[in-house]
Amino acid sequence: MKVGLIGEKLGHSFSKPIHEQLADYTYDIMPLSRQEFPLFMQNKAFDAINVTIPYKEMVMPYCDYIDEKASKIGAVNAIKKVDGKLYATNTDFDGLKLMIENHFDISGKVVAICGSGGTSKTALAVCQALNAKEIIRVGRNKGAPFITYSEMKKRTDIEFILNTTSVGMLPDIMSSVVDLDSFPNCVGVIDVVYNPLLTSLCWQAKQKNIPYICGLEMLVGQAVAAVEFFTDKAADRSVIKEITQKLYHDKQNIVLIGMPSCGKTSLGKRLAKNLDMDFVDMDAKIEESAGKTIPQIFNESGEELFRKIESEICIEAAKLNHTVISCGGGIIKNPLNMQALALNGLVVYIKRDINKLVVGGSRPLSSDRAALKAMAKQRFPLYEKYSDFTVKNNGYFGYALDKLMEVCNENTHT
Image (cartoon, rainbow, N blue to C red):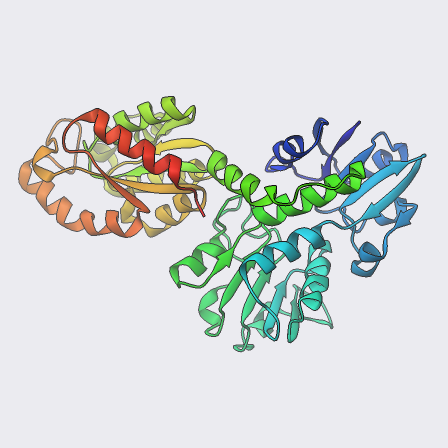
């Protein structure tokens, strides 16, 4: 059975491991340019396909039969071939409805849907099915029934924001479709983007203590419905939560922060080996990028250039998955660094007593004990602020490693 996913840019897709866990077939990721797309659909060289951006609407003329749900929505994301004919449905509806129901009650609420593509049509149908009081559709340069993002800011009565655009998706992870400061009555944020695991929009919500959910649960839910459609067999929908949690755990990074010489690199390397994860030392990456040692960068160009290079490396590291990232001690000085690292990462503060920290050597900002104490006074509160968990490393290395392993195994990004 030839099954897979078509779309324009699919390097970020998590669909393959989900489908292959649910069904007994190989699931192929098939990126298609807009020039390749028509010939692919005409040839029908597949048994079943999922369809994603930007082809959910463009694929409809190639289908022989479109069910009532997909026809009403005006977008298709699942097609199967039966006796040479293409049958289509929309399982995004099932996935999004399930995700919203699991986390929110939008009945009687004012919901703003950001986006005007095929997924926004699905979101509209879901919000109608869940009895939203008012649904505000927001799009760029669109006429009625859409309003603009500028006009959206005037609707301070908006209670839920539902992002169906690709804004905030890898590789542009720092972008957010709206600024939540404009919506004082917002009580819930829903984002269909799932890579990064936490979008910048949902990161904003987290800072404001607004409940939020990103799109991975929707992805798994729609995949379960697609498997049922492709195979004509009922699937066990109780596995959705289990698969979602496993994906979070398998895809998230472990980000280690803390003072210079607290043990981030040594613990990080062992942790990565024990958990079969990749390992990145940010300081080593900075030196590789600059072609100089960190002391040389400080001596020749000063801390400002060092921090600029550090932030550039940080953004790239934040886009990784399944990686232990050991950060330089000053990474917390730029809030944007910590926002980026939090999108795909569980942030752990490696805490070591100040009298056990090393001074001098290759550490430009902790050349003596007085400088180290001044640095610690500034940084300790920031390590606490930006970390999800703290692991103390004051004695036996194996004990600290065991505690770190325990934290990483028992907790996910959610």
